Length: 202
Length: 202
DNA sequence: TATTTTTTTAACCAAATGGTTAAAAAAATA
DNA sequence: TATTTTTTTAACCATTTGGTTAAAAAAATA
Image (cartoon, rainbow over all chains, first blue to last red; front, side, top):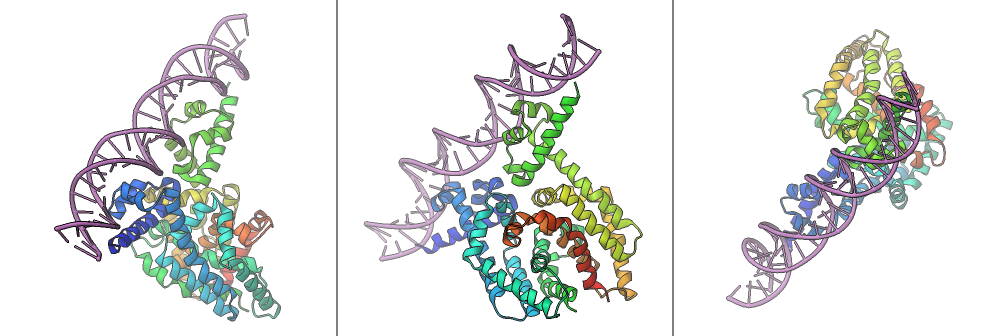
């Protein structure tokens, strides 16, 4: 008797991810999460004390999946263009698997920005960012790329990688009409990297 | 006796914009909106029947400020690079004045995507999009720009223009540490346009 | 089969919140 | 000043919702 228990807890987490992403912490209803997980409210509370704790677990788990490898990519010693490709690929891979992460972050960042910052610090993202910023400045100095503020370049890469997922419900209909945007996003990573590199290379 | 009345209603709308953007429709509290507007809850309900109606008004007003000129820029006959500059500038100008719009749209799009689509249709954005997509295809054919899917190019422009505002609370601290990101965003429009043009031009 | 764990049922509570109301007070207007 | 509109006060209601509880039932395990 443990197998069923684990399965139920996993069902709860899966349901919670969807509901929290769609409705945010305030908009999510425990009853709705329970329904989606195929259980009742009493059992939901049996496994997770309260909504905040459940949200925290879902949120922290998701964010770490994003941040941990990102820190690694930022900190490693690849050449700049390769690093850009790595980071684009990382964003796309994680967001295809966990498309709810950006909505989480955006909603939470208005509530408690310090918390995410702290996680970024713990996971080494801040450290990695400094290293990459330095690398970009060096590339500018040595004439490999056009002059650009490292922060701006990083922001552009993240914007191009993340925003399509954030805006997907709208973009899918506005831009891609009936087409399946999932396929577009799956193959987008390389095109984003090329777009960025094309823009900065000399 | 009308002057004070108008002023109060405007105070309510200003307060509502901030609160709705920060907390979304579900997370916003009428009491909090009343407090921020410097009035009490009874008066708030005296002017706006209920939360949904208030939200609708704030939301539709804001969205039209975004969509109406966008449709015009998309539909006009400027040469492609100039059009890209116009659109970047438009996004940045509106978002500097109404930075809450993207959060509105993102939250609402999960609730009722059809509604925004309808507004886009009414305001002529869909029509303008088609025209611009055609123009991009022509520019590719005549060798003015590298091959790119028009939808992808449009998505990239929007991503680069909008995402920094969406992610501002985080980016401000993660990337720009203590610096004022407001200044960065104010001057970003031209840099985004250059970034895009540099990437596609031959 | 006996035991333990998981799940359901169902009723219940407290707090938060959207919304109402009526009367008084304050402010603007004529 | 008389009248009308705006605003406050303050009490109140209904609903939603997060959360609890206790007992029974079902399922897994030993």
